[in-house]
Image (cartoon, rainbow over the protein chains, first blue to last red):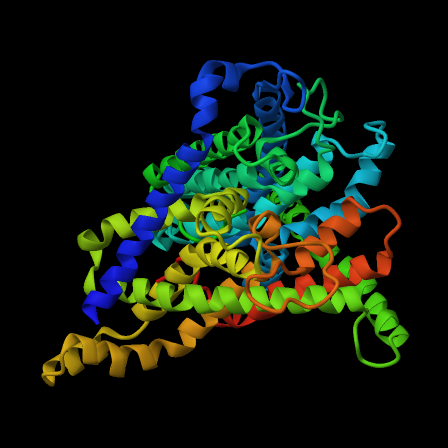
Length: 284
Length: 272
């Protein structure tokens, strides 16, 4: 028993090693031939041009724009909602919210992308954006919504972990509720809330299907949120099926996977430092 | 007092805005999916689904069955190791690995599955390669939820069994696993429901949009619901919208219904 389960546990560590190793190996051609500088900072992503131009700067900018806009929705709205549900809402209301949050968490990303095409893209189109409404803004709104359950659930956990005696002491000293919230409860819960925000961002960065379906997939440096953009995960998903095995184009997509992995792991490490394990709750 | 009520208003508005999307999802997907599904079923002259939708649903069930076969033994064994044999320091490397695996974006799992299962192992684009990729993808969720289920077994059970002179292995097999079984099943359902809806991991490992006949072996590519919805809604022009809504409803059900037991088991999330 002990031996068998230890073997299983060891294979988990092995899987992680293998994952990193294969991403490095399959992308090696790009790191060597194109070089990290030209790859990461290159202005143009035109893998099918002759010669191919493999610069992912426009994709990084696209990812950053979608990520920043989505963070406003996920973190801004998510943390405020968590504070309301944990601190202010009547328990019955908070109890009603839980299944709704779970429903959102359980909705597959392809369904969210589909609903985005039906609902959000037409709205953005009316705002005067891209002809089909497929834009950084449309993708970001839906991606932000997808990361909401992570932020709301973990944020509530962080607030509920603050001892009741802290609130009682503050109220007993004559502080009003606002003061108690901002000066006693929030500082105590700050590391947990920050971790919830960072883990929400982790979901945002890796989200693939929603961006693939809603962002318009135009690998160009965006000038406005209403422009179509492409992000790292969306380009990997869109182009992998059309690459020739062993080509530098394919290697570039694997190298992008490694960049994506580095970014999400950095975020999860920060969340870990902030005192909250990057557990299995939310993966894009 | 006025400051208080203004604060409460801001917070309540934010909460309402945060919960609204869930209601929109529910109302739209059920409101448009259910009639679509009904009409499509009626058009087949009975209870069936149109051919492509039925094939995609069957493909998804095959993928999930394969995922379950791969991830459950590995995940439960790992959880037992962490919970019963290597608490705290000894399991640190495994725990750290699981945290990092949980953070891997699904499309990166797709890349890995393609490089390892499709090409390196020579499985080709196949249901088997897709299942293995999905298994890896859901491994962190399975382990974490199973570990929580094992932790909920009262320590007195362990102590009583050990005090009776029963060995560790026997204690785990006869006392702990049976007690934790409902929790483990709940965890498995949650994880498999999620796996059913994943698109990115099967994009280049398993899924095709159309197969003329049902797959004959695990080494054949399969149709799958998430991929079907993706292609028909955003790549094909002029496919039947009823099929898209019906697929969305089926996917929502596949994701949410298996998650219900873990919801009812109370706030198991993080709270121990």
